[in-house]
Image (cartoon, rainbow, N blue to C red; front, side, top):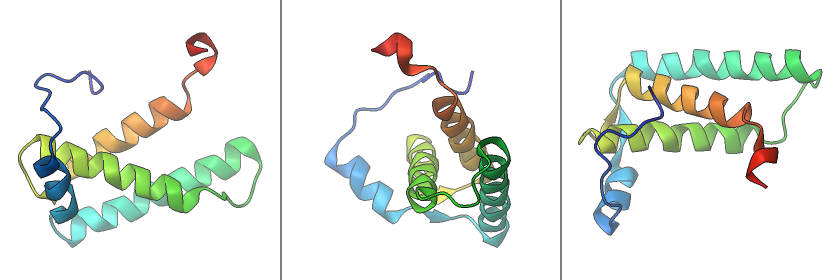
Length: 103
């Protein structure tokens, strides 16, 4: 499963310093991010009948944070395709989660 940690790392100051250094592997990965972003935005508009999301920038930053965490967890400083896919899977799982049972 994508949301099960197999080898969790201790979160240290070095972990966060590495997050700051993460970048795109190449333009292809960055372009994939743009396409996934468009899909997310169009899905939001279609399902909620709203033309804009006030939280789009925050959502984008959160997804990039998740992707960067995936890269650092795999001892890389470059976001690759699988990092993006993992980040979006996690994002959509969180968005669709019923939080009533957690309250």
